[in-house]
Length: 113
Image 1 (cartoon, one colour):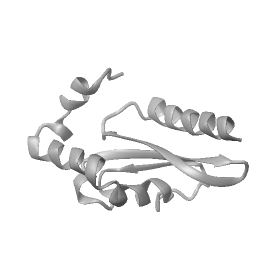
Image 2 (cartoon, one colour):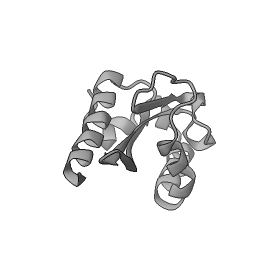
Image 3 (cartoon, one colour):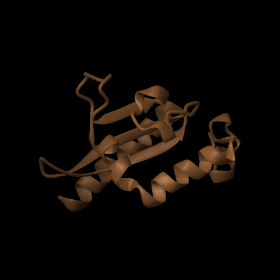
Image 4 (cartoon, one colour):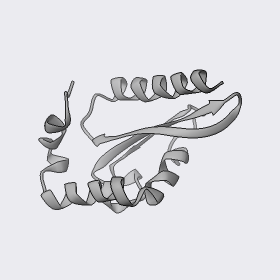
């Protein structure tokens, strides 16, 4: 399992400085482009699960097409009020990442209900 930003930066998806700069810019200054992806269920997942996983080209934003975006909505009662997500390399420990995102959304749901 990866531990820390320096380990993530060693992954091939982040080997080009321009790619990293584009992703950082998206995360810092253009969240309005990223937020709709976090709230939308993956178009490839019809299982009804709360966790959405978009790998590579499944991401509609070009800057993150070399990445994986995992997200889950959290609720106040039965009303969706927000979403949490994880952006990382396509070669990640999916089972752990999905469990972490889902557990975080569940924790926030419980805390605000």
